[in-house]
Image 1 (cartoon, helix red, strand yellow):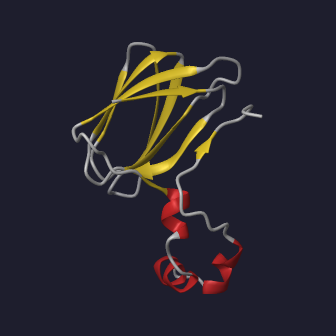
Image 2 (cartoon, rainbow, N blue to C red):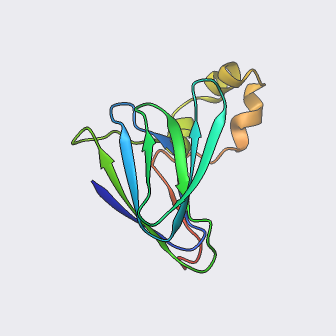
Image 3 (cartoon, rainbow, N blue to C red):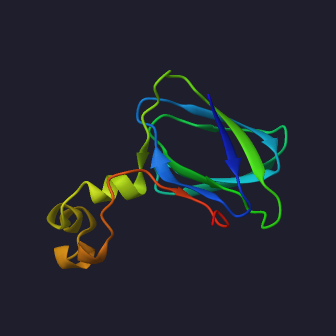
Length: 128
């Protein structure tokens, strides 16, 4: 289990857990979840205190606090004691421009301006 405190307008970067499903319980505030479905559609749900949201293993998703004044708190439960976390920033940074060009059907040079950070990023406003 992880406890997530989202500052106003805070975001957890887009990510996936290939080895774990995730059940999220909103303890306080409101949280907006975005999930990329296998069909290619993006499902977006906004839930509040006392509500839950489920993400199947391997689904790409992220969560954000839509409130610009109040924090939000979420408890995330996983069905694996060591859930893998593959974030968008670290994941894209791990591939060469040639591989990204091939995957996205673009010229490799297009990706040369991407910042390369092989780590996961917590995105939040107002952190100083």
